[in-house]
Length: 172
Image (cartoon, rainbow, N blue to C red; front, side, top):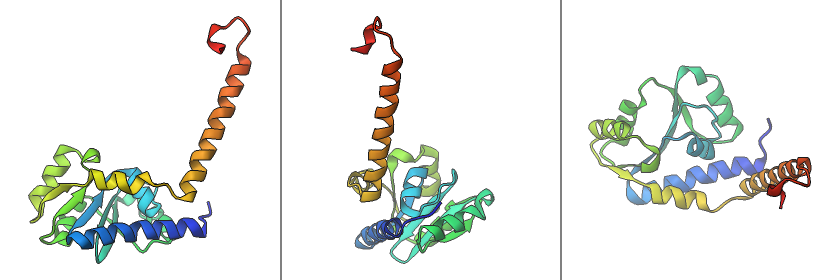
């Protein structure tokens, strides 16, 4: 699958935006859910954590993705270090130093939050509002995907409606 130059720019801009946000707060950000990770880096694996601060960007994943992760982040043109780690939270604690760690509280389990809190010197802060603001404005590539999905849905509905007979009351 080819990645367009526009998509490469978008991933880099997204990462830069989050890192600037971190710099303004002297903080770190971690993305725990696969949708946010893909949106930021292009990585499509099911196991990953992205750590961002003003000076560092790391994708943590497990050995199943040792080959896939570097290929995908390179394809999407992002300058993210890829680390294979069974337990990335100790490494995140070292990277964060004494800074607060922001994460989307809607995408983080209580046990994960407690684990991070036990390892870092700063605080764990819910950045759900920031995450929503990041995703609410769609770029052109996202609009094209949404439009395509809507067109496919309409075609499927039209096809299903054509299968109904005249006596079916749900048709109208």
